[in-house]
Length: 113
Length: 109
Image 1 (cartoon, each protein chain N blue to C red):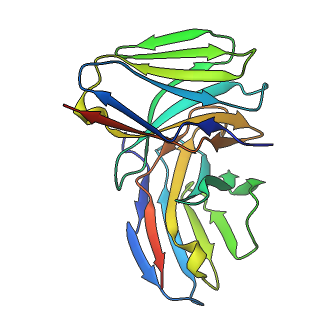
Image 2: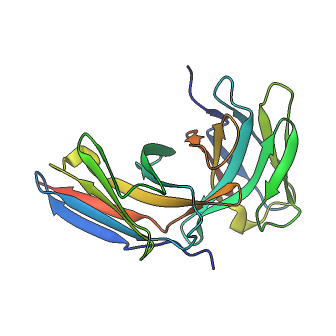
């Protein structure tokens, strides 16, 4: 099976813009989770989607949102970008959600100038 | 709180064993994981241990779990230069993973 894929791999935006990141899970996986990784805060959970419904949300402002489509693909959107949003955004998938093992994609490196 | 702690750095000689330690917080965690991250890459699942186990061995990797002390360790036998990376432990907590701060393992010849 193909692994988790994320597009784009790299992105450069300026403050105030918005961005959409995409994640395609492993075939058959219905749960998709998003994490933010920064040098200062480490790896932090953003949200999890299962069968097109957000089941769990981390402690991030409302500028961070997401959705999941019927084919389990997920998108994450960040509006009104701030410098502090520069990070590696990782997507993970599994069949039914934590605690089952999550498999991670390569990430999208977002740089906000 | 949700602080999973790891030491920041570990330096070992090629061929020696490496031991990476982790202290987690949630005693109800069902699974505990070890992930590896190489520069510029995502997270690669290395191994995991179910909470009712004390030890799990998988080729060069040995995971030890002490539930009483909430301590998890990863031992890498015969460490190679290709093992140089950042290693994260993670606990499961209410439908998400809580990651440790990561331990940077440097292997020198």
